[in-house]
Image (cartoon, rainbow, N blue to C red):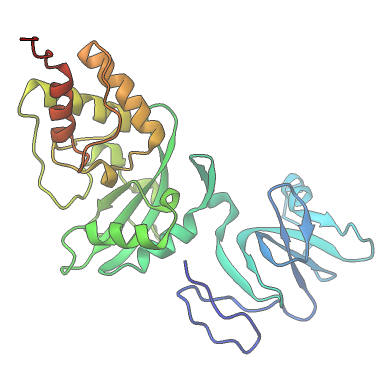
Length: 293
């Protein structure tokens, strides 16, 4: 993801707009995952240090004690843990990336949902977008992107390819759900509670849905839908568009061996990796060896 030129007079050259610098009577520090607070440049939770601070939250002494802290260096200043996540440059320029509570772990890596959502919104043909973390059948987490597209973008396959070039693979949503419009709260924000469960919706893929046409495809299709905890999946759908990672792939092989009731020397995925091509590969591996002359 591109960033900006750092400096008080620097020109913004990337897609993320900084929020500026702290005002004169306040400092903005960073708090890392270990809870250490420093004035160094980097990423973390924004912490405000100042003499001019609110007394706390009304009738919430527990919350006040949790986020209003005494300055460890002493004196009259206090610290306020904002709950906002972002970047701080060497000269104090601040970039807001979202709320700390929207930071999740996907496949062991920390992902900021706000940063992913910004990248999706910048995609061509995207009128509106929201990114949520979802859970698969075995408790693993994945990202689902809900998008409203203009008429020039019939499906998000191009957007998906763009994100693969811009973001680490762990930040690319595993599923895209095309919406006619985003559900909204009374205040006009996206009502995330009303976003549909992506596991119950066919992913927005460029190819039409094709059901299983033989027994082998039916077994493979059932295994794929079980491992990915979503459907309906078509036999021509590319697994790379469905978020199949190495862990899911291992589980898929085990599930296929269970379904076909024997070990399968499958090795790597066929190209392209689809139910159709895996079914062909499985049938070849199950075929009896030719008799010696």
